[in-house]
Structure formats: C-alpha cells, structure tokens
Length: 214
Image (cartoon, rainbow, N blue to C red; front, side, top):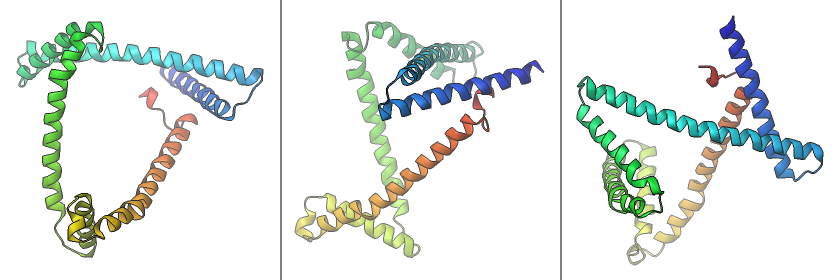
C-alpha cells in the first residue's frame, strides 16, 4: 500500500511539474504579461533550477557507481580487470590535473595531447568502418539498390572538384539531389521524430508512462 501510494505521489508530482514547465515555455514564447504569467515564469525557473541541482547530484552518484563497480572488479580479479585499472587511473588523473577547470594549463594539456589524438583515432576508425559499410551497401541487387548506388555515386562525384571536367552537370545534379529528395526525406524524418517526442511527452504528462517509478 505504501509503495502504491509512493508511485501515485511520484506520478502527481511529475505531472504537475511537467505542466508548470510547459506552461512557462508557452508564456515566455507568447510574451504574456501580468501577475499570473510572472508567477508561472518564476515557478518554472525554480523547477528547472532544482532539476539542474538534481542532475549535478546524479553525476556524483554516477561517479561513485563507476568507481565502486570497477574497484570491485579489480578486487575480485574478474576478466577485464586491467581495463578497470586503466579507467580508474585515467579518471582520478584527469580529476586531479583538471581541477583548475578546462581553461587551465593542465586542462588544455589533457584536451590537446590526450583527448584530441584519441578523437582523431576514433574518427579515423569510424571512416574506415563507413567505407567498408558503403562497399557492402553498394551492391546492386534490385531496382531500389540500383537507384541508391546511382544517386550515391552522383553525389560523391559531384563533391569532387575534378567532376566538373568529367561532366559539367555533375555539381548541378548533385545540388538537386541534396536540395530536393534528400531534404524532403530529412524533413519527413524530423517530423516523425517530433511527433514521437510529443506523443511520448503527453504519455508522461498524463501518467500513461511512468519511467520515474521504475
């Protein structure tokens, strides 16, 4: 009974908070005045500030959880304990060196000589994976894959400066493909994502979905 009452209370709090923040967004967008609008704006700002504080505490809890899980793996000598040692050394080393902030000398050293080379290596591997995936995708099996390969080759050739010497119309066709069918598809995907987000938000606001009680 107590557990059920707690879930009902959490649902009510989530609905009320969501409606206040949503009303604050609409009041700010419409530029409405008056005491009621100012009250809604103040409550919305207060709730968003509390959400930021809770997020900060969640980050600390996540930090403690990472340390606890990997320290337990090291202590019990489970497979992959070496990676846990490297992770904890990197974690505490970065925390100690970067305590002055991202703009300090140590923070800039970590960013310029550790993070950037790692990011460059990751993107190089990602480019290789994309190339191999494109090679597998560029296999003509039916009419749909034929048009896919055709349009992809036109766009690739249109991006290369030398393509204008092969056929002057390559850049023109490439721009048409990117601006008409591709843009139409992207807008359709974005509309679908927006409708999905709205539907999910409404289900949370009315209490149909309660991820905060799981």
